[in-house]
Amino acid sequence: MAAHDALASVMARVTEQWSAAVAARELAAAGVPVFPVIPGGKRPLTEHGFHDATTDVARVESWWRDSPAANIGVPTGAASGVVVVDVDVHGPINGHGAMVRARQAGLVNGWLLLVATPSGGTHAYYPATPGVQQRSWQAARAGIDFRGDGGYIVVPPSAVDLGGATAAYRVRQVNPGPASAIDAEGLRNFLDPRRLPRRPREGERVQGRGDVGRLAAWVAVRQEGERNRGLFWAACRLAESNVPASEALDVLIAAAGHAGLSGREVSTTVRSAYRTIGVLPSPQRGSQPARSDAPQRGSVRSEPLVFRGLA
Image (tube, rainbow, N blue to C red; front, side):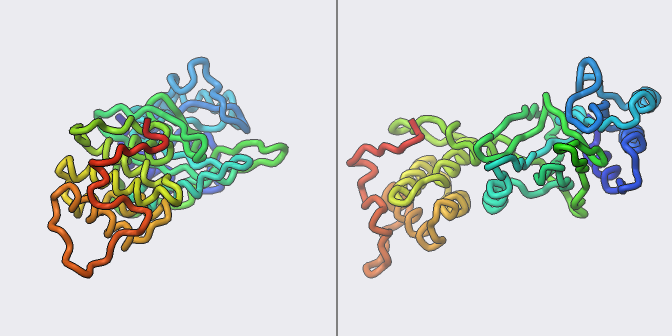
């Protein structure tokens, strides 16, 4: 695996005066595999695409002598040491809104660098997780793609033709502090709740971060009238699985906030759920009840709960 900071260090030095040939040579010399992409486009020039990527400087120089206007492709995942969250802007789809929500939920922090794309989108680079295969995926409705193992990106100073006008990839910001790996599956579950599992059966427990992330993602898309009920149900599942109330609140507050609930409403509903399961003591007389659309104490046992999107 190439060191992720090798790519970032080269990208931090790219200027408008650099040609693609210079940038490709610098990347290869730093240990980042590259391959040529058609001038003005995103399709590989080589027969086997990103599988032909190399750090052989002589080979790289030969490619760009033959096609000096070629763009630069870099395979993502273990090959280059980086994975990329691709925020797309295309027609009615604008992924920036989804990226803001993911950032508020704490799912996209720790990036290495941000690159502005020709279409008005953003590439956010993260270190690949050593020893873990992170496959590429798409969340089309959210306008977000993930480029991991089995994918590639076009990097600065490459440029594409947008209907007669040429626009370049530009480094927008380099993170001067420490970068961290991204939970790609957690992000996918947040952006695409259709991938949620069925509702657990009676007595079944929430297992690991993946299930917790899916519960939070499901809560985040509840509509008015079902928000508190859905939050209550999810909090009950966490309580039954012995997740501490403070951790449950940390997990659910951003998700429920995205659904439109205030922090106070979230805290009240989560505590109500934990009291129902018997983890917390009953409140003293005069304490504030949960909102009227939240399930009442005991309803999690007496009434079957059916939620759209969880079947």
